[in-house]
Length: 390
Image (cartoon, rainbow, N blue to C red):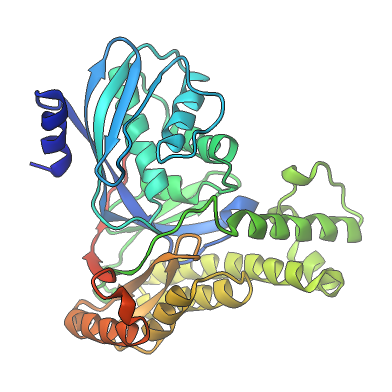
């Protein structure tokens, strides 16, 4: 029995009626581009968010989390208009956005459990999707996967105030075990590229820095605005039609326009655009490498993505930069980068399973030599690819 099921019984003195699960995700190549309609690659992993729940016919949503103290409560038809600045804001926003599409009558009581430390694996998107899955089940509605992705993104953008794209939700929704998700966030077209029999074996290593983070309080939104500002300026320099600032995306700008006018951009904006365009190319190259079964090349591109995120997107906490540097010089790691926004949280890596023990020893030793105060908080988790929530 999961801890969330035990806790549910402790609170309500009866068993949970149902269970829902959504995996976490990694994005080996394609980071910091979906908010400007780039392309991404992704894999769901076999760790994620569990929700034990029962329906509440009075329409009340009552949720507890094993990771947070406060119990949250609201009505499916009376969601607070503004966020309350706690862990449940994402779920209030998701309720509101789902209710705009479908009539909701039934609420639920539930207990949420995360299976890995928070930070960098898109736990917020996983919590929203597992909650939406349960809320749809108790209300007997069946939105399309894209509708659930859109509800989740709108909850983050419009209710919580994080300028994210749809990378996280798409990976957690569409992914399939032993396949690489290759998604165009402009058209929503995606491909599940199977792992070739000839590909070298791999596992997914998650190196948790021991430091948690929140997107809304970080510089995430600023980086997105800088990228969009670069796109807006490039459109003006090239004499292209452009409209409202928030509707402008780097995807609208041809690469040749960037190459022609890049030197006119403020240095910071030029760096953001450089990351976006080079990351777009890396995703296409990475998808081709995965089709060939070339995990060495795919890993190299993932390391390159991490470098660009540090020096062009200018993100990454000291802890994550240190982890990234250790990974680049550790035998048996094909490639990797920090995961998520990159200000705190974790790094992900694709590793050769035969090196698993030595990788864990090397990374732990080198990291704690630099950050001895994080002993007991730093952790390593070896995962496999997994199916998404769909």
